[in-house]
Length: 248
Image 1: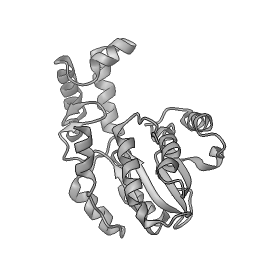
Image 2: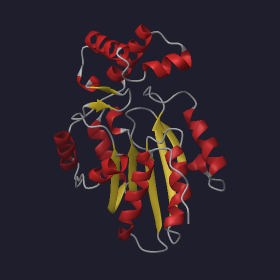
Image 3: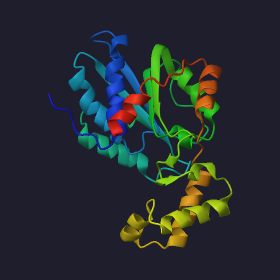
């Protein structure tokens, strides 16, 4: 048996966790899984094609949604996701399983609808973390679990724009100047963007500073634990070591 190749280490890691935790469920059970912030559906495609290979006795029902007015996703992402999924995972009614909501809306699912709730590099973009964790709790079945990969505030290296400490600078002028300086030194994504689209250093620094200002909202280790406690979730970082071991 061979699995489809993952585009990202995060996809591999999430698949591994889901497979490891399947002892919670019985054979021939239907397992409902929700991908929060599903974007263009690449993670759902990877899971849909690989989970049945690892666990053929489970009936997998995978859903996903994203926010259309937050600013991270490009226009038309929902149609693109449904088109990609219909092409790569045919025979599944993706129009019924992929949804789009407004930022701040409750998730469009019933209480206790899902056995598993996951997200991949989403929590650091969430504006209202209390609502996010509250909705995780609400939509999870009793005995279910959630898995979330995201950048903590304690990180030195910010993984979206590939520069250190940018997520800890809140003064826009200072942030823009810092990004410009590091980019001039050859760090980060500037050279790649310049080759692809011919963007100037000034424009690049401003766009990246805007991204960190408006679309990034990192929280720290202690705040994650407080949020989990507040919303009756049992927080754990038990698979973090394996993730970094895999990346190394």
